[in-house]
Image 1: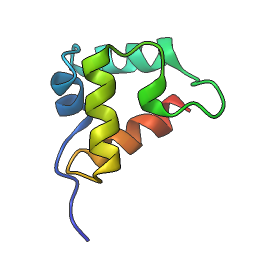
Image 2 (image 1 turned 45 degrees about the vertical axis):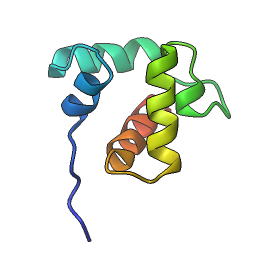
Image 3 (image 1 turned 30 degrees about the vertical axis):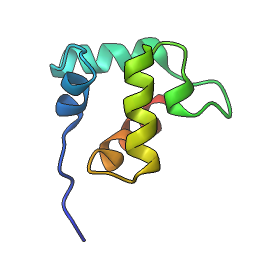
Image 4 (image 1 turned 90 degrees about the vertical axis):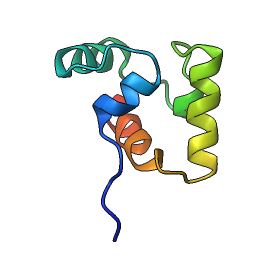
Length: 76
């Protein structure tokens, strides 16, 4: 099994968001829970470029997929 390549902090930085622990926790608290049946990348709080990045990384099961899945779980 492969170790997770990226941290939650790395993901937030990649998305252009504040990436310190407190900012991440605040973001999650403000945006959870996602509406039932809403895919993470379709959430209304993402910009178009953030949405595209999240969607492509999940579809391709790329290096970022594991941490994106983690964020999805924390927003559920």
